[in-house]
Image (cartoon, rainbow, N blue to C red; front, side, top):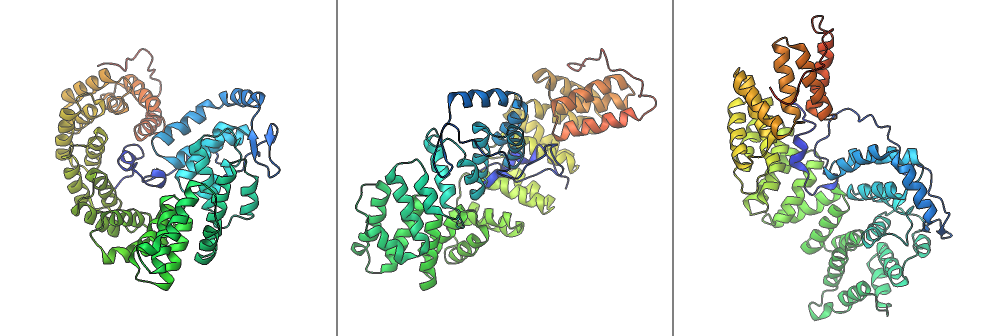
Length: 489
């Protein structure tokens, strides 16, 4: 199957690290720098002895804002891809901007946030630590501390923590969490020594001291502690505690589940796969475990196994069902299973919460696979459900054009352009229509408009290639497109 750089990713943007379900081959024209390769943030303003910047001066903020204006186009492209959940592409644009700026608080945070969402925690921390720490919001602080705590190999953890300009209770809590990386005994001893009022520490203390009212099994205490860490989003501590329990009690199902989901949150998907598969074998109706295993096996590139788990989750009532159907479609697509792809599309397009993008991708895929009957049926069905969608109108026109029904095709293209004068599908197909009629001037005009409307997308690239071909045609080489309209036929 052909790779579609624009349409197919729309199906697969939900809750995966990075959301990078589909990446078009080739580069973006951006020279990417390695993470953290920009000039280190200056310590002018207020800073700590460990190199953390506490505050920026007003002059620094104004200077950065002025320099940032010169690169707003690159930064906006990064923002666009970030919104579309194409985090890898967003990162390339942001890193390119930071390499040119040298330092910039706003771009640095954008890079850190994308890396955090990609679960590349050590790299995220290397950027978060460059921010003015007394000026960041609560969400950013939480992400900084999580990135800091999730790096198992971080040197001098305690000294870095001590140097952070945060509240002492907050730092004491994270210091206790770090102790728990060295084993259950050290963890429990340190927690029992605590006598302060930090809410999270009190919660940990309660889980350690109160277990005997529920069970005399001290491993139950340890699993309770691991579960508390998981609830507090301290996934590395949760994983280490649960895995130590498993060493002593391999069949302790609750410990296996906590370990599996903790490794999943850390995006250690190979170890997560081991633990969650072990748990699933004992409880195959757990839909959250089945869903997680579907995601994990997608990233392990075992698409058939991924679909087995997704199907299991669907059968056992996972909601929203559309999310799993999108994932099933994409896995079948990657396997080259056209029959499976279209079978799931049929289910997906009947759902109440189906989106216009679902219809667009289904129609587009059907056209590319020469299933023109399906393409036409789904385009018309989508137009009824989403009457203001110009892309579906243009796609129906595309099917008419393939069938040789040019009059109906041109009518649909004109209608689509009335709804959106920058519709790249209509512009491209009209360029092709006029090229076939040897009206090279109008063809060039439409193709140039399509290229401009969809600069980095499939239809824009197709238009650019056709313009190159047009330039090589002797009978078209001297044709000017000036004066040709691209708004109506």
